[in-house]
Image 1 (cartoon, rainbow, N blue to C red):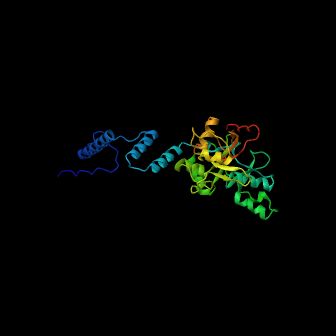
Image 2: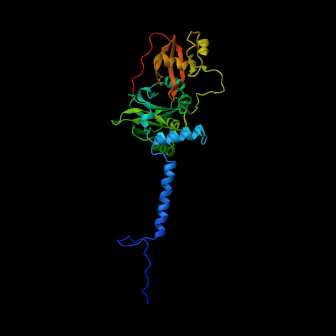
Length: 306
């Protein structure tokens, strides 16, 4: 009687002399050959740049919408970005002095239009908390309140913190603003959740936007004018009775950028054609809003580069 044939043990490592099942080899060969053929005919992207090119090609072939392509590219690029790449540098930060009188604080809040402000004590680098603009109204109704009691804790992040991780933190701790610090613990700038999201979805409309309003020039409480960066030059000339050139540029932002030699940053001021342009809001490589007054005396110096 022939001895029984032992069944192969599952998971047993192969030994010299073992014979593999022929049908298994053929299946493996067919699968690998198929994968090689597919890769040869339609190779996938080997890098992030190639993936971005693939997305652009998909848009051209109308496989995805342009908005989808922009968002996907933003997600890919954001993976390599840090807080230091997106932050508003310290010299251009809008801060409140804890020792300033109420009227002065209110003026800054109205002029800048932000909803949150870092508050410092003594030196600008000494940020002690965050003040919500709406909380400042409580001082108007109850002047005896201590401003320090209205401050919310400031969140500090290093310049090297990745935007992906920072966005997760913003979502989990419900903070919308963080102070960015450098390797020496000094204030390098600030970053908001809106700054991070705009890297994905592009420019986000905010309380400064008024798409239904035909005019790009608005009068502020102090008598100055808030002028949209895309306002027509003719409109600005009509309001201020000036003669800014209207033939070479379509918008006031384009004219000012040409005169300065670059796009202005938030907090910078320049004089052009007898008018003083101070940047109130700049996003996406363009000025969204200027505060414009008539120029008196030499233009102020631009803030130092970060």
